[in-house]
Image 1 (cartoon, rainbow, N blue to C red):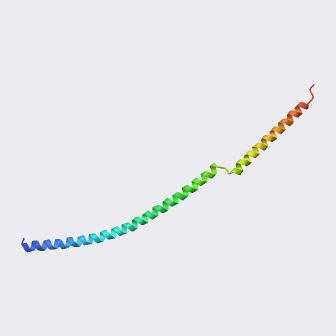
Image 2 (image 1 turned 90 degrees about the vertical axis):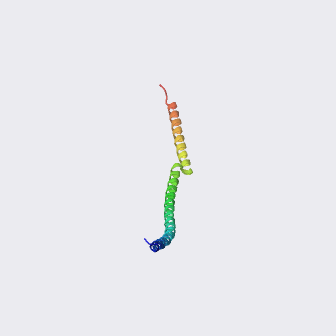
Length: 106
């Protein structure tokens, strides 16, 4: 192979190598910009999903808290009913004991 053919082959290879490098840089820039956009969109979607889950867990937590803690007026009402029932039972017992004591013995 002649010296001229080798130089021509090397020059052609150099030109194609340069074109490949330029194309690689362009594709790299495009991929990098596209990757940023895709990554940002993916992160936004993940953030929205996490926000939905947080809202759902917050509702569940609040619901459980309501179930565990009765409002104060209900607790007071239950105590009042119990006290009234106890008073009625005691009054009835005292009345019955009084009536039994009044029964004449033979």
